[in-house]
Image (cartoon, rainbow, N blue to C red; front, top):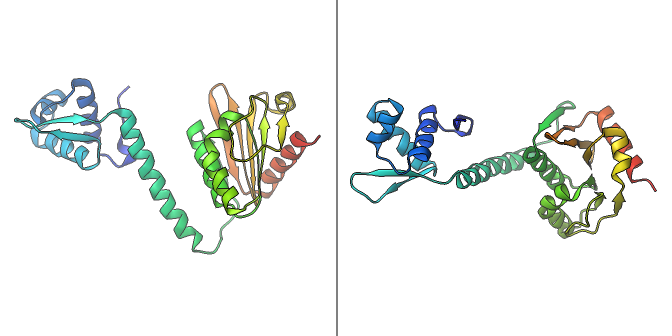
Length: 230
C-alpha cells in the first residue's frame, strides 16, 4: 500500500518522495527523481518540503542525500500537530457562547474514539459518568487525573476484565453479559452534561457516536443506568 500524506498537509509529490526514501533508504534528489520519473527540480522541492515538515532530514554528505524519518516518528509528529491545532480551536471556542443545533457525529476507529472520549471529558466542567473496559479506561488516565486534581466529579465503571490501573477508583464492575444482551459486544459509554458518547467495541474496531441529540443522549443515559444498577 502506498502512503498518502496529503490529508496531513503534504503535497502528492512529497508523499511519493517520502515513500521512495523509505523504499530506497538515503537517496539524492537525482535518485528520487529517477525512481519517481519526475523532474529533478520537483524532486528537490518535495524533499526540501519533507525536511521543513520534519518528515525527512538532510545528511551531511556530498553529494547531498536525504533520509526519511521512521514511520512511527512521523505518526507522532502528525498526532502532536493535530492535537495542538485542536487545543487552539477548543480554546477559541471556549471563549465564545455555546450556540448551534443538536448534532450526532459518527466515530470510527479506536484512536478516534479515545481522542473523542478524552476531549469530551476534558471539556466537561460538570459530572462525568463513564462505563468502559480496562483497555479504554486506562489510556484516558491523564484526563481522569486532571479532573480529580480540579475537583470535578468523575464516576468510572469497569466493564469486566482485570482491575485497571487508574488514578480514580472505579465505582463498580459491570458484568459484560448484561451488555452483551443488548449490544453483543463490549461498549464504551460516556455521559458528559447534555452530550454523550457511545461506541460498539467489536472485532473490527470501535464504531460509535458523539451526540448532543436529546433523544439519543437520553437513551445513552438510560442504558448506562440500566447497566450500572445493582
